[in-house]
Length: 155
Ligand code: THU
Image (cartoon, rainbow, N blue to C red; front, side, top):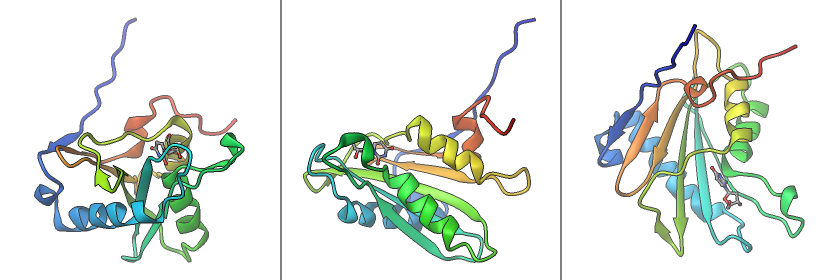
């Protein structure tokens, strides 16, 4: 039997058209691109995580001379946020990127490893929403699991 998956998401011309909590988180992600350490790729990625108690944690990509040892902005922010959750849960993550101090036009989409980490923090009651921000277009997924169908859960 053939089946199909439908992924729903919302597109915005500008992040300012998003709900206020979302556009504020996007601003924090963009600010966080300044925390990036990317001497190799010169691609500065920022992420901002909003917790259920309203706190916001940010992170940025951290590269390393031994290339696989670096870490994406999303996981830098998510691991820190989860380590400091203190009973709160992760509600949302915003991701932005810049090159040469200018925000990239098209939203960047998280790598597979980051999607897997987002999936870890989704529950059926509290999915993690994902905001991908570019200067020409922004996108919102209500549930990070939509970005990783057939997610590995546990064995
Ligand atoms: N990067 C992120 O931090 N997040 C993404 O979603 C995609 C890529 C980083 C990894 C590396 O430091 C640089 O961007 C170029 O790939």
